[in-house]
Amino acid sequence: MTTANAKVDKENLLYRMGFLTRRWRQVLDGAFQSLGVTDAAWRPLLHLHHMGDGIRQKDLAASLGIEGPTLTRILDQLIAKGLVERSEDASDRRAKLLTLTPKGRTMVTEITGKVSALEHELLDGFSEPEISQISAFIERLEHRLQETRSRLKG
Amino acid sequence: MTTANAKVDKENLLYRMGFLTRRWRQVLDGAFQSLGVTDAAWRPLLHLHHMGDGIRQKDLAASLGIEGPTLTRILDQLIAKGLVERSEDASDRRAKLLTLTPKGRTMVTEITGKVSALEHELLDGFSEPEISQISAFIERLEHRLQETRSRLKG
DNA sequence: GCAATATAGATAGCATCCTATCTATTATTT
DNA sequence: AAATAATAGATAGGATGCTATCTATATTGC
Image 1 (cartoon, chains in turn orange, red, brown, green):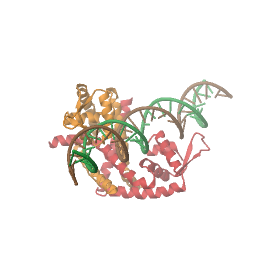
Image 2 (cartoon, rainbow over the protein chains, first blue to last red; image 1 turned 120 degrees about the vertical axis):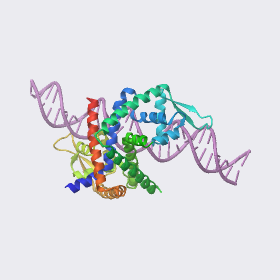
Image 3 (tube, chains in turn brown, green, blue, yellow; image 1 turned 60 degrees about the horizontal axis):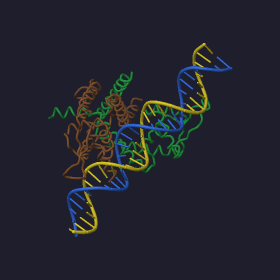
């Protein structure tokens, strides 16, 4: 039985990760509801803050690991809320430059605090070496997935 | 710099998991496209096969870790494809019993082979102890998330 | 026995992500 | 210089997940 269960666990590993990330999103969603931003919206704000003002959508999307159209819609929401601004790029009229508004900066501060607190609470019971190992595991898996993906496509 | 990066890694852990599971879904989606089932559809088939015929939707949903409405839609698709059948439960006329059709059983066999091959390929570079540790990590994290979630709600 | 509550499933509507495709602009090639 | 290809972003439509709510049955309590 032990063998069978271990096998099942192994086979469900990635699925259980998916389950986990859904729950995590729900927790964040709940925590941010009072701020008026959804889970998908706060990360672009932090990245924008971190990368500095005046970056292009394309670069922000790459930094976030999402596709252009996904970011476009999120930005529409953030702009509608007055947290972010799109402006013209004088050197390339196809591009738009993104900047945080003062309201956006305030929001970044609030979000940073909440995310840190939640993540600390969740990862508190895990040792540094453990977290490093998991992190390395994820990185290797990401790499392998990329390979598999391009192999299947090509 | 090392410290800063390590901190970022820790903070991004759950997000990177989400990224990973999206990619994994895409790989599976691509692999199953030729079979005519999507990623969300194959898992109910396998669970149904594993749990035996004649189970209720409610139980299948619980087994999959998804909510009832989500399963309802997936089942609609599987039934439309002739892989699964809903039938009346004589003992409780609210309930529906689920069974795999012969076509569904054939599909299960094909899917099992593909999933196993892909998962083996992906997890091949990882040792048993590693996988066990990751698995344990996920389990603890699931538990903590559940706690946090109910704490925030109540 | 009948009203109130609980349960199984379906439906509706929202959020997030993706790919495919369209428009506008820029870069390259001949 | 004109035609072609490439790039930035927007739009459309599909897939998957959730919650809230509806209908149809079962169960419970008085």
